Image (cartoon, rainbow, N blue to C red; front, side, top):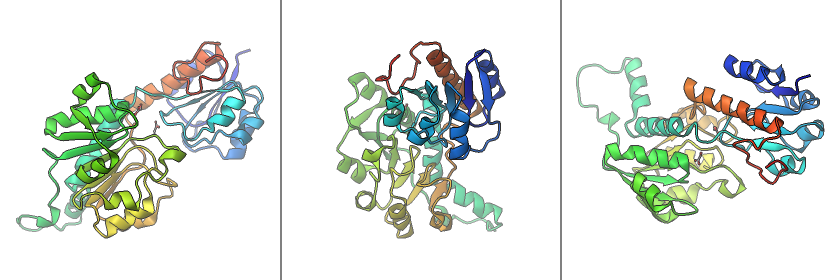
Length: 326
Ligand code: GLV
Ligand code: GLV
């Protein structure tokens, strides 16, 4: 008998094929998250699970699953995991770092360019038939990207990939992070460590790349936005909740800052509807890592983490090494 696992939400057929060589799979092949009670019920006889950000794995979910040994997220973030409860239950938890760094950095740049040069509003204006006769469209004046100052809050691997891309635009790159990068990393990024205050004050484009935790909740709120330049753009590609959406909406309404490019929101997908009325914000539906190649690589990595964990090996991307087997 193969061990039984749950795949909580539709993934690539290649990944199911790979997993089926090792496991008997209970597969939710719909691209819809399972309700919490159904998730708990379907976990009850499983030893492992491939999970998505939309699956909350907490004490309640774990209580019904006495045989569970590993939960493997198809995401680098794991704020859907209650790690303390997962570790207390002796369950291994894994994520998918690395394989999405370049794709997510590309998405950050797409938002930065779209926000700075007002691409989305201009596109809509053309589609709406408002372009009549030639004139210099002062309405569509944006902010230069080249030679501007790029600020990065949270200089992990994705932040460094964003920074390296700035060289082509001959930007000045500054960052703030818990710890300073190694000299060779700073050299590769051409980036200078500054205080958070200086980062807020100096950045023309401020890109957020912090993981979400209680410690990073509303790290950017009204007081922080007030320190930014009125011409600045804020890019959030990390997690909803790092930014106080209410404060950002007010700042965009009042033109305290010039614009924002956002891929993540508080309470997504139920975002604050006031965003929809603003023409100085670009909104995308949490697509940071969404290319076929990268999503496939992430799902395969999650599968490999689960295969290793259930074979009694240390999974390559264990996030709670305190658990036995780590
Ligand atoms: C996506 O948000 C991820 O954490 O991979
Ligand atoms: C993610 O891999 C990060 O370190 O930013």
